[in-house]
Length: 97
Image 1 (cartoon, helix red, strand yellow):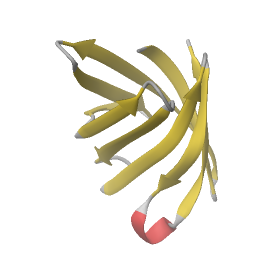
Image 2 (cartoon, one colour):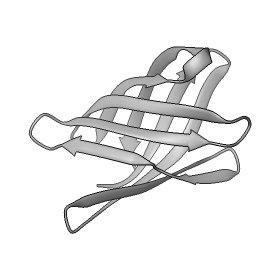
Image 3 (spheres, rainbow, N blue to C red):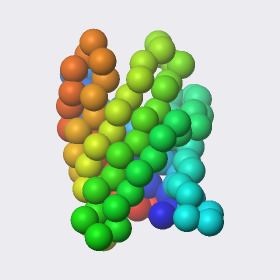
Image 4 (cartoon, rainbow, N blue to C red):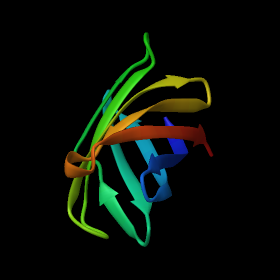
């Protein structure tokens, strides 16, 4: 799956992160890094037939938040929505690095 540059369009401005996805033995794993911290992805699903991708990242900085990303991968780009709990949902985009 590779490394992606992901930009979430939050109410406080764009938030950039690096998303590194790996597939080993049919299992996906990943790490999302940004703002000086790296977090192991708790859950990832990807359907190659539809391009649908979903992952959960429980960040600790700048505050504890459970981020739920749901989108569609099309070639070297992805887009969708990230649900952030009390902060609501907003759009994100990604580009393969």
